Length: 134
Image (cartoon, rainbow, N blue to C red):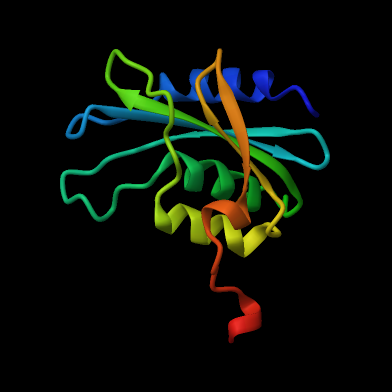
């Protein structure tokens, strides 16, 4: 799939399901597998804060729990409630989780449904800790 607009649209749909009563910052993610399936996720907050999970990890964990391990691209869209940010990048924890399952050329699409740009994992996490570091 080279039309990342579909992936951004799926991320936007997932964003609407966000449970973010504390930050009011809603994030959606859409993960494309190499088999063509799309897994979506939203951020899910918790009053204790540390049990909160990001949209990107939700999508990845859903895919992995279904047996998927080969991923092509991940779209992320987010912003304050009622707004969409021009750019919403994965946090460091999410970048590290992405590095667990994807190579350095994996595409991460950031922006909104109308304007977005593809980045590589290596560009967003140049010194990832991987199994080669163990």
